[in-house]
Image: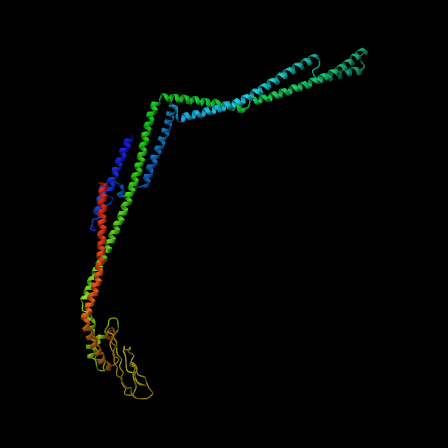
Length: 510
């Protein structure tokens, strides 16, 4: 039986190794086909329910409880058989019980011996009292035999009878003397009869004492001890008979015990295997869940890394494109545009300005207000919206301010004032070039000169700035490429470690 258990245990270990072999598949690269790997594991463990789903704890507990009930029932039978074998071989629990019963019998005998010693003393006292009573009764009967009267009542009745006869006077003298003599005799006998009563009281007292002693002889505890002694003696006899029968059939008992023990061992093995299978199925299920979580995390990480790598590549391309573009090209073009604009607008009239330059997305077109002189000397104010003016000459007292005329008390006509305006787009371009905008037509030539100087400086420094931009871009590109290379090295190291772990697991399984 031990060898069979060992063989079963060995085969179970080999099965466990076989099941655990594909637990960690080697990851050779990021391009591993994860669904195909999962299919391989399922095919290898086709008989395992752990891959299909989580083991049912309720079914496992029910199976364990059923096995436990069978084990308890077999244990009861096995204990009974072992007790019989113990009785048959003069040992075991039956022998212990017999020893206990014999000890109880010895104790009862000791108690009965003590009671017996006291009982003998009581019997001796009763016997002595009975002899005294018998002797006193004999003496009393002898005394009563000599007297015609037994009690004092009889004597008193006779005395009263005689006294009544004497007092009646019907008696003769001789009869009267005889009656008086008899009365005197009866009075003397009365004292003797009174002594009879005291003797009778003594006899009654002795008899009561004897009855009390007999009650002590008939003690219930003594009877209970006797009954207990008889019960234990009978139980000992039954045990002896059972032991004799068991001893005669001990070979049958041995075979029954061995059969029950084998069944019990099989149940314990089944219980252990059920627990082991449930534990392994649980472990596989949790390992599968963990593996799925790891794979999902790896996929998400790989997707994030790929997106980050793509972003960095796009950034490298953008940096190179920007570095390849000539420096200050937009500023030079803005300078030339502004020079062309101001070169064609040096007069005081603002109607020749390029209307298209003021058309900027999101900003309404500016409508310039004009002042018309009335022949009667009055100034008419128009309700149009104000144009955006950068600057204007300070008007004299009574002149127009920002296109509006201040009426005066005189009837003179308001003289027209020269105005100068610059579109908002051009103002923004001048501000970006750090060139102050002209506030009047007289300042336009200076502005054009500033623009030409700015353009010449930008053109002279364009090649140097372009080289600096390329150097800065290459530095940033080198840093980005270095970070990409470090990420690739870490990924390759991780894949190599996973591949090595998979090879070790395969070698252990083999």
